[in-house]
Amino acid sequence: MPVIGIDYEKCNNCQICLNACSGGMRCIKLDSEKHKIIFVDPHLCDSCGRCVGRCPSDAILFEKMGEMPAFEGVQEPSTLVSYESLHKFMISKRSIRGFKNEKIPRNVMEKILNSMKYAPTGANVRTLKVTIISDDDKIKKLSEAVTDALIASNAPGYSEALKKVKQQGKDMIFYKAPHVMVIHSNNPGDAMNSTIGLTYGMLSAQSLGIGSCWIGLAHGVLKSNKEIRENVAGIRGEIWGVIILGYPHNSQKYYRVPPRPELKIKGLEELS
Ligand SMILES: Cc1cc2nc3c(=O)[nH]c(=O)nc-3n(C[C@H](O)[C@H](O)[C@H](O)COP(=O)(O)O)c2cc1C
Image (cartoon, rainbow, N blue to C red; front, side, top):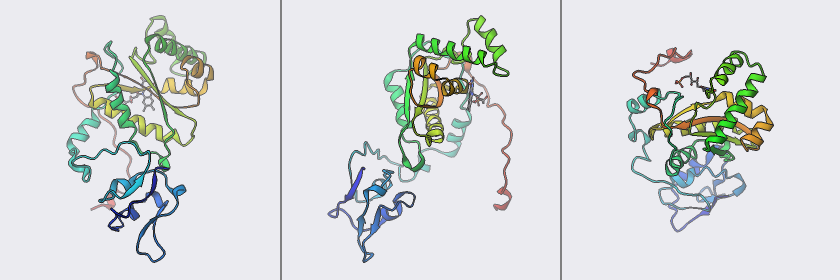
């Protein structure tokens, strides 16, 4: 449990931590005289770290919290990036299906993982695991196993196409990507957490010049086929998502953003 108490030498009793205390868990309270901040029950703490992040006096005592980046703009995130830049960045995010024959260096992959680490999770439960497959032979074997499983399942719309593609020796699952990233765990609550984590990762990757694509086809097979999951991918537990990553091939350039239908929205007309 990371938060372990209050350093009263530093605490000026501003009580900001009282409001910061996450999701109504309220492990930080006022004492019986409603005067002084006290840290009551470590079992109520979900390690969200908001009290640590918001305390102006750095008075929250904690253990094993990891690094806590502090930088200009952290207090007012809207100053870090304009809506225009972020919007353009997000709508330029395309699924990339062709890659240069080049591996992502470890320090660059670590940057992507470091962004994923900050994605929100329900109740701040941090159980996600990430497996990165970068061995070309292993990726090929996995692609072939997924292709064969989809052909055998007569998956509508895919089975016939995959048979043809297989004969041509093409990889319609991972597109010969240099890396396959699988997110998994044993926590059913991670179904949503993983999607947010991977989305953080894909956007982070894009900022580093790296393209990505969700691979739902592989996800479906890995989820349902224990033999492929454990013996080919080498993963145990529930599979929550699969993406590919790599430096985009020159053929993957876009000159404009493809159109998208409007969202179906209710309630906007109530705003002035
Ligand atoms: C959940 C999910 C699963 C997907 N699975 C695959 C897949 O198996 N193979 C593939 O080539 N693209 C896959 N895609 C990519 C979509 O086809 C793509 O996001 C969509 O056509 C929109 O294109 P864009 O990402 O370039 O905007 C998947 C996307 C999502 C969100």
